Amino acid sequence: MKPLRPFPFPLNVGTDICQISRVYGILKSPRATRFVNRIFSPEEQAGKDPRLRCLERHRPLRSAFPNDEPKHFEVDGGKPLTSEEIAHRDPERWAAAAFVAGRFAAKEAAIKAHSHRRLTFHDVVIERRGRSEERLGSGPPVARIKGEEAEEEDVSAMISISHDGDYATAVCMAYDPSVMDSGRGCEMS
Image 1 (cartoon, rainbow, N blue to C red):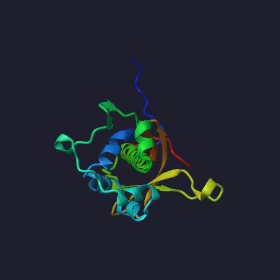
Image 2 (image 1 turned 90 degrees about the vertical axis):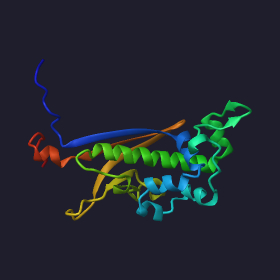
Image 3 (image 1 turned 180 degrees about the horizontal axis):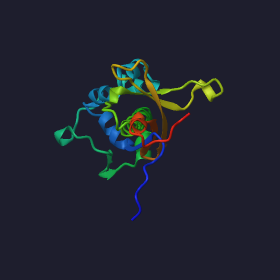
Image 4 (image 1 turned 90 degrees about the horizontal axis):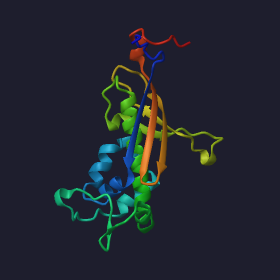
């Protein structure tokens, strides 16, 4: 077998997928506040995204599940509901779950793309980059990677979030300076 040539560019890619109904179950449980606080940084929580307002209005339901583990579906007459049926019955909380699942997947993807760092969910802030030419002034999401103590600024990474049915998925492409430091990457000018 021939020797393997390293990828020549200082880029890393991360991806993740998250089941919306699973997040929906968590948001209906007593663990909702703890989960949201674990995922969203103080900056993101201060932004008060309208999709999260329903979590403030609706108190989590008392868990009927053993070990406080949420189910991925509700039961209607013994038959599991589809994600479409759940979304139809509780659209506000379903929208919040879809939003949280997308952000969760985006943060996981960013953490994977920054394998040269030891990032936590609070080190990654998913925000909208405003563009005047975009509809409603909202551009595509971007991951703000908080700089380490010695760094003067935060770093951005490209993010794409997509939703389909019961799943949210995200991809992150990020710069990896360790590739250049090791001499494996091409010189970028």
